Length: 600
Image (cartoon, rainbow, N blue to C red; front, side, top):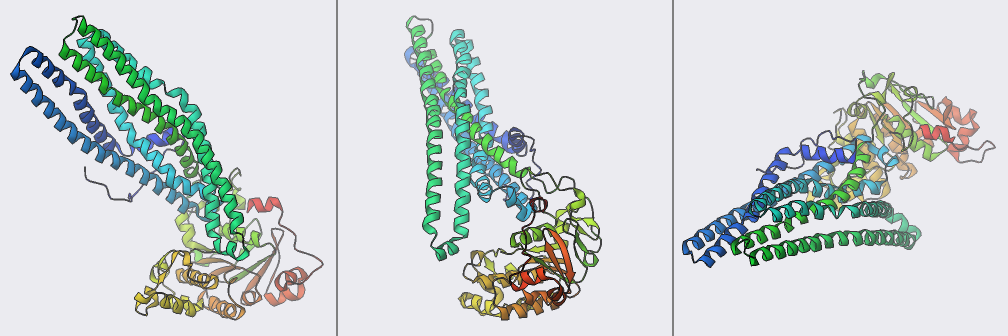
């Protein structure tokens, strides 16, 4: 069949009721591939199973001195070998197709889920777990899905061989018919312990991957404080735990593989001995003995497939359980069906904190707790799922835009209306033009957005680092995560991207924390100009940004406690003055209560 282009246009809607249901859904989603794989496997194994028949006929013809019979048997064996070779090629091609398609489908589902949940995903599942699901687990799942077709063919061929042997020699046929399932079932007592050990290895591997990802992300900071050796020791300890767990799992896996070789071998020896006894006593001919022996010896291949399937089932069920855990996460407890009406003219309101950002205004929010400020910025986006083990927030606590709960709005519409600019935004590798290739209103040109973010020196640095761009900054290459740029340069490029997108509502979390005061002052003025007439929320404590705001809100202990202009609050609110000017104050900023933090 023609190869299907990847990625798939739509990975589908999986059945997440259980790991087994998910695996069955994957098989159903590639029905044609499964049917073709089963047919090619039947063709290949059927011809190989039938090959002992002409061999036996040829031996018997040689014993009887029948030259024509020898030629006929040779031609029959040659034809079967040719067809079996063709079936092997077609089976391998289709099996690889099924494997890759299933793995790609799971990868796309995980990527789509990560896109749906956004930054809130890391609050519910560790980053290392997501990486492990998208790498090792998809391979195990693809292996099992591919193997199912070969198992079907192996069972059908076993039944066919048993039926043929039953007609030739009933007792031998009965032994073959009953012996194969007994031998195949002998491996099942080991599956439970193996699955438990593999699950332990998989969990420890996910933790090690998470630790490695965190270490790589913070490598520059670790080098600055001399903490590389500390984290290296931690990763070394975690990797040793994974190694020990892998050794324990591999011991059982090796025992299972040894069974797949030893027991079929003993079975073939026993059947052959009995067949030889029948031939010696004259009950069957030499040719029949050769045919029965060949057919019985062939059954070692279906037995190996059944043993491989048992192993694949064990690891695939663990991997499918991990995948379904990620894919079953939901954005809200209900089904989004509401719609936003003119979001550019709607107020953004958070009932939990009492925060209201008026339409068309630049609203600054001052929080004494920086961590709470970051959580609040995510919450204002309207698509932060509850943490694992938490119940979904009541509807009356949902952030509202123009009176409509953002949680009840389709995700794409909510994100188009409210854009949250993270404190540490990510820059993907590519050219500057590709970085700015985002959905935008068209009201602001790229040059205008870059100028508002005061990114002139960033453009010069990109041009200097990209000799092939011909002096055009838009063709200049940005390295992975913008590692060749300073923190302030990365921050300004990300801010320019958000300003160019020009959403109806823009939430900025400390957008100038990595720049100097002079640049920050110019960015603040450019931000106010470029966002004129748009709703903007800036979570910051910098006086330069706060002074540009139409209104400033002070959030204390999870609630808005004061509102006004920056200068008004400086004069009348000691707590605000203490946070903004970093002065000592008799009324220190208290931590956010746990109940409020969990709700946010």
